[in-house]
Length: 156
Image (cartoon, rainbow, N blue to C red; front, side, top):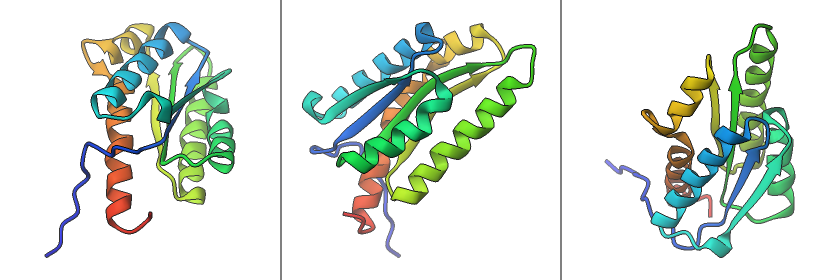
């Protein structure tokens, strides 16, 4: 039986990172975690491009344009949507996750969902570099692993 497992090093990987400016105190930590993880995995700084989008809702379109206009092996989308007292949270989370998935499938490029969807600001802080680790770093690890898997199954 052939088994394909993603490697955590893809020396020439080109990675785009899109960060939501909304809740920037949280998303900056996610970005810092993603950049550190990519560096630890051997991705050259010159192969990483970072774009700031106004909010999480704008992540899918930004990812689509970045893929259309560049040669990225993966895109990492980072954001933080925190529940409030209105249903706005549900609409934003639903559309962002659906949009990111659609871009990935439409373009056959891993578009990694690194968007925190939390009930409280405290939960977001925990997931952006304290108790619960850094989900930006986790997204970077997923991006590199997916690049490796797709290369092995014949995408490149």
